[in-house]
Image (cartoon, rainbow, N blue to C red; front, side):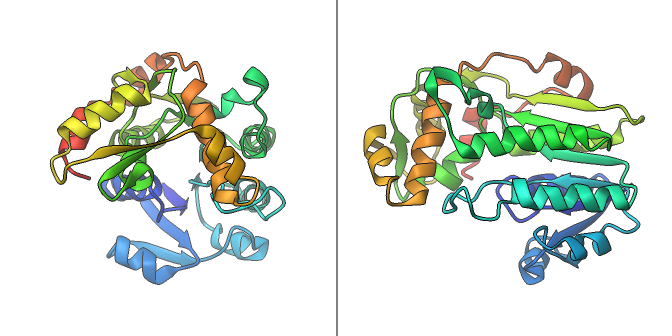
Length: 287
């Protein structure tokens, strides 16, 4: 299977792309910065392109069988800015339809289902909801993943020097998942035969609130001694009036802290394998 991989250089794109290549899929990594991709994936196949440029997508998709989309809202962006999961996805679907792509794989999220709960409203979550609707309406066979919180959130987003940044109070447990386990599940999904539409909830082996997870991560992380850097969510909400990154921060933390996540991954585990990396083991690996 020839897979065009979009978004290989990000926190979640790197492990998934690496696993698909390791599993023997014929992956071509799409990007604007080819030098960066070559540094991350020596020996892989690359192609220059931009999802906000439809003609380039129409060209690079020729001869491909499937497309994997690892897209996200930039934390520094605003609603009216061109968005990968809106304008970019529109172009991907047009190019995929024209080139006879046999499967679209897309990573969404579980927490975006918090949209509309407790009066919560955020344009970034609405973009995610609309993205799923567009994919389903495209008539291209799809695989959509709805992951819980990734363990990689700690080293990539929450760690500030020797501190773990905490915003607000976490009251709802999350089934933390390691990107390496998710990558294996993605690989197995591409090995499944047939053109049926598939949706998978992606969750790890155990659920914790952020308070519980913070204790586990700090206890098992041995690379350096960590502490907590706590801030009230109202402060980020106020700063978000002026700074888009703070606006993103308080919205996503509000949702993660309160989304009433339930375990829904039994079907995923049966079809794609059960994740085995615990949060303690992930922290001990000193990512």
